[in-house]
Image (cartoon, rainbow, N blue to C red; front, side):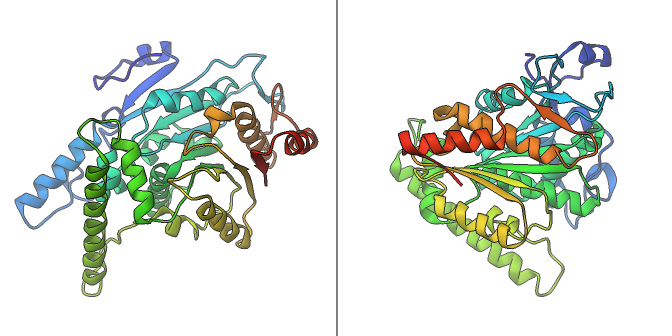
Amino acid sequence: MSSPSSSSTTTQQKQQQQTYGLTANDIASEYRPYSGSAGIMPMANERQQQEQREMLEREDTLEYFIKFPKPTADNDFVLVTGNDEQNNVPIVMLLGWAGCQDRYLMKYSKIYEDRGLITVRYTAPVDTLFWKRSEMVPIGEKILKLIQDMNFDAHPLIFHIFSNGGAYLYQHINLAVRKHKSPLQVRGVIFDSAPGERRMLGLYRAINAIYGKEKRCNCVTALIITLTLSIMWFVEETFVAFKSLFVPSTPVHASPFSELKNETNKYPQLFLYSKSDVVIPYRDVEKFIRIRRDQGINVSSVCFEDAEHVKIFTKYPTQYVQSVCSFIKNCMANTRTSYQLTGDVIDAQTMAQQQHQQHQHQSNLKYD
């Protein structure tokens, strides 16, 4: 697997590689998310223009990881229509949790790559998720532009989202889709340990999980960061709400739970969560599930008893793979070009039998 590079790569070199480490700069030369020259919105003073330029420069350092696996006869996803073209192969967009390193996200993408699917991996920077949330808007637009430039909008898409960090990024991709009126062929969304409502305790535990391994960060430091962020967000949201009373203002989309619970998209959703998750309480996920079901969304869920936050796959790899692959199979069943899953992917009857046996012999796993 090639390592990401900010330098440009020739077309011939890209064709020879299976894995691409793409920076936003590779696909942003003609992209202008804002009106005005060089993608910078006309502003009243030089300071604001400089801040906008710095933000755009930061965008150019964002790294996307894309892999086009070679299809083989052993792939679990097999095109059954007799069409030899591969332009309709599903694409899985994996959006990592806050602080996620790509080497961890890569383990999840391999689930799909081993089955012949194209994968895209991206994790939003921690400082953008927490300290500079306004930069999430152009990041969402960059990802949408990446999808369009790679012609991925012609493929069925599955989003695989991790924690509130991934959900927050997915939320801004949706905003970009609505803003630019560029619909995507999304077939389904997988939520791993998400979404959760915003609360002080959950934020503290998330901060501690992200920064806790650093020597300079202890419980007191994590608490100070949590309080600072809470105050900063409150002031930011209050100011924007007050400003909107007088002039049109861009709202702050603060909570993925609050925003996504009323999402207008109707495609199926799968929720994988755990009762032992101390960052995203399982009751938050179940509340979200009830809301979406009441709205008529086709919702599936798997509740685990003792897996930690975003570590369900680590503890229950077999059940995890079966769940996500069966979900994608069902999502693709309604498309014009159908995909058949074989191998370790099981049908509904077999799944039910295994679940019944697990319920009798193992009390730490429950399927909903």
